[in-house]
Image (cartoon, rainbow, N blue to C red):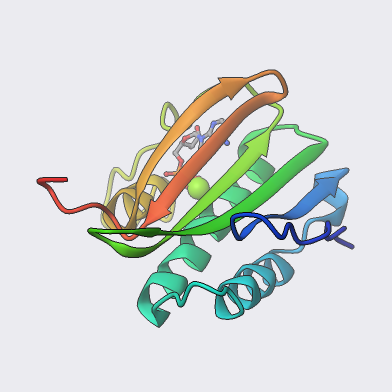
Length: 150
Ligand SMILES: Nc1ncnc2c1ncn2[C@@H]1O[C@H](COP(=O)(O)OP(=O)(O)O)[C@@H](O)[C@H]1O
Ligand SMILES: [Mg+2]
């Protein structure tokens, strides 16, 4: 269902999953479980609130790559590092094969709309961005958000 690559011993960095033929193989409950498990076992202790936010944001990004692109391969990379100001920082990168940046489509126009809530949620819980690259793009986020003065 999901091919897990070997844990890297260096820098607590891991490519958690690479979904080949993503539409057929990606399972969001498995994604959530794997990210939560990785964070729970990180040698750098990650607070539960930060871990919960990171799992939610990773789910949103994978969902977006599945729903809004025709990517056959979607990658998910997670790392934890220590920041002097923020403590344990979780960085997640989701790669897909579409060069379009997130954010140009549906927006959350009414209170009852179920569309367009993913990126506002990401903005509320994390710092995030997008970088085009040879395979398409990488969308990244970091939890927790830096303080305003950082
Ligand atoms: N990975 C992506 N590739 C291309 N476009 C994207 C991607 N993720 C999001 N988008 C665009 O950004 C819009 C807003 O995303 P989001 O806030 O998650 O809302 P929703 O997924 O409900 O439409 C999407 O409607 C889509 O047009
Ligand atoms: Mg979305």
